[in-house]
Amino acid sequence: MKAVFYRISLIVSLLILPLSLLAEPLPWEGLMQDGSRISIDPQTNKASRSAQGESQPLWDGVHQLDNGAVIIVRDGVVVMDAELLESHERQQREMEQVACMQLVRKVCGIHNECQKHPACDPARQLLSLEKEELRNRGLNPIWQGVELDSRRLCLDALNNENYFQVCTKRRSTNRKSPCQALQKQVCGSRGQCARTQACDAARQLLGMEREELVQVPSGLTQSGAECREAMEEGRFFKPCE
Image 1: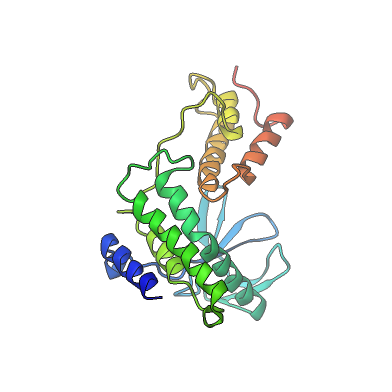
Image 2: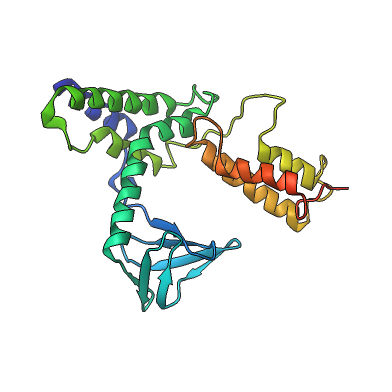
């Protein structure tokens, strides 16, 4: 136990995270029945709606989400029901469970392209610390139900963009991802169709795919699946000519 907490202190000292950068509760996000995305600020309970690349405050009234949950907005503030609160807590727990792996993939790269970055080693230490804490939890009943310090630190680190920067290097390969292939098909190999709506949409899908790849070890992302379907369907995403 002492060794675990000693390592936590070492890592925290190494990160030198100022209090202002420590992670605050993350906003709750969900989908409305029309496919638009809503986000609720945990500090103010104010809701915003995002659709077609634009975000605006969610209007007052009763709104039903795609999972059947209902929220009420009054004066721009959400009155959260028990079902929504439970969904928010479940979302937080799921994010905590993958935070350390996500941090390593974000900083070191999906295929360790940025393993020489100064922040890569601390990220890996946090992942090792999480594994050690999980082992201790399995061996000692007193650890059952206790929040893991490593996961809290990983969430903090994910919000520190100054030190734990995103790895922008990509492993050199001739094989394109589904969204890379879609962008090339729609925008043109030389960008000759770059100003079309289809090209702009393909670029947005590519950006979403890259974000999802940080979290999905297999590389099989939702955005990638959408890009494959778009290439097969071809009505909107027509080849650049």
